Structure formats: structure tokens, C-alpha cells
Picture 1 (cartoon, one colour):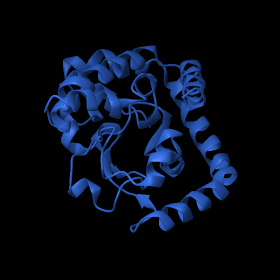
Picture 2 (cartoon, rainbow, N blue to C red):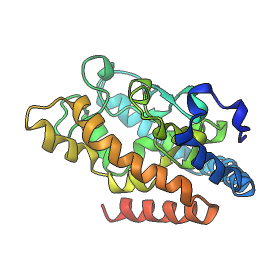
Picture 3 (cartoon, rainbow, N blue to C red):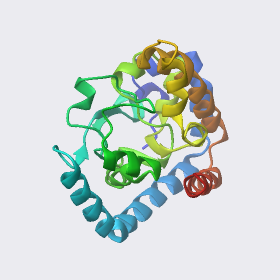
Length: 232
């Protein structure tokens, strides 16, 4: 549900967010179509891909110790937190023994994890997050609170909508771990590179997408995402 301006969290009610809010407020019917699409398609897809979920789950368990799913706390619409569903692609407790982002040669990534990351299978369980309303198919990728706390006022505008599985930024940064690796080879930390080199550029794309938002644009982004995965 799209809230009234006065109902937004206080930290979001700033001049930098206002123009994005006004743009979305004029597109309530488009937002309704977006939610209907999310519910219907995620429900159907969960049924269709359930055998794949089972197979990948068993594969992960056979490959390494730890749970099948990775349930990290992320931030979504209006700054609300939720626990994301992802197939575990790293060793158990990876976020406690390293950074919250990964590089190309990250030793925490498991053999199976490396394979399912390449074809984005690790993201499939997020269908459950979409069905529940915590996420949407197209939108800004959900960040951990640590990175949201580093947002500028304008970046808070991305929290006007639920966090997404894919976006133009996701497509542009489909090889994000390789991009980060180029900087870490210079001796910089993963967090420093992500916050100063990656996040600002991704947010430029995300903010632009909010102003361009309509249901048709969402469908175009989904098609481009599938193309990027297939041609990877």
C-alpha cells in the first residue's frame, strides 16, 4: 500500500524524496497492477519451480554443512526490515567471518554456490518474499541496514517501493563481484569499495527508475534481466 506523505517515516519526509514521492503518487493504478502481477506470477512460479527448489536444496546440503536457505535481515519499503530468502551459496555464518558483499575470489563461496550464482538460481526462493509483499519483481535490491544507514537523503526515495529482485542497476552490475575485485586488488576493503564506488552508481540507476516507473517499464526490465542471464 502506498502511504500518504504524512504517514511516511520521519527520515523519509525530506525535500530530496519529495519529487520521487510525487511522481509515484500519480501512478497508483500502475502500482496496483504491479502488486497484482507480483502476487499472481510469484504464486504460479512457486508451484512450477518447486521441483527445482527441492533439487537445488538437496544439492546444497550434499555440498557443504549448513542450512539450505540464507535468511539475512534486509531493508525494504519505508525502512521496514524483513528476512530475505536465498539459497545459501557460501559457508555457514559467512557474514560473521567477512564482509557483507563478496568479491570474485571470495573463499567463502561454496562449489555449488559458485555454480548457482552464475545462473541466478540463488535468487529463486525470493518468490516467497514477493508473495508476502516484502519484495517485488522489479525494484531496488534490498540492502542490509549497515548500508542503508549510509544512504544520502535522496537515496531514501528508493524505500518508497518494496525491495526488488531485479532492476536496471542489477543488470548493469551483474558482475558486481568482479568489479569489486578490481578495487580490492589495490588493497581496499570490500565495504569501502561497495559504499564509495558501487552503491552511488547503482543508486543513480535506481532513482532514475523511480521517475520512469510504470508497469510497461517493469516488464521491459524483466525481459532484459532474462536476456542478461541467458547471454551470461
